[in-house]
Amino acid sequence: MWVLKEMLKMDEKFLLIQPDQELGRFLLDEIMLSGNFGQYDQRVKHGVSQWEKNLQRLKRDWRLVWYFPSECLWEPVFRWYHFFWRLRHK
Image (cartoon, rainbow, N blue to C red):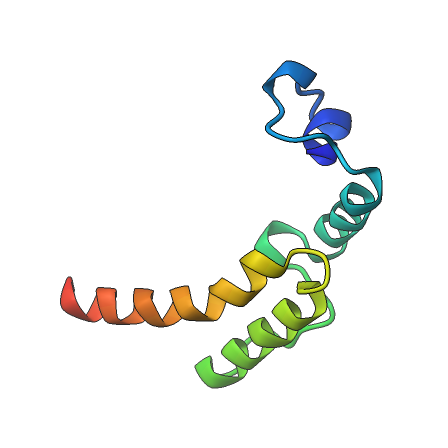
């Protein structure tokens, strides 16, 4: 919410929860460092196999789990669900 309020100038009446400046600054630093969904992150290798890419995602989730536990812990579960959903609906 802090990023929405401070960087994107969203009106405070539209925020779902109170902005947390510490988490917001951390998130903004991650956004600026890694770019569009991690596409420009220099900490990860690009052009690697699918298994290595998934391991890098898990490593990134582990780095963020202390700040955003719900999203990071459910991401691998959702990834498996989405894999089987794609197989069924292809």
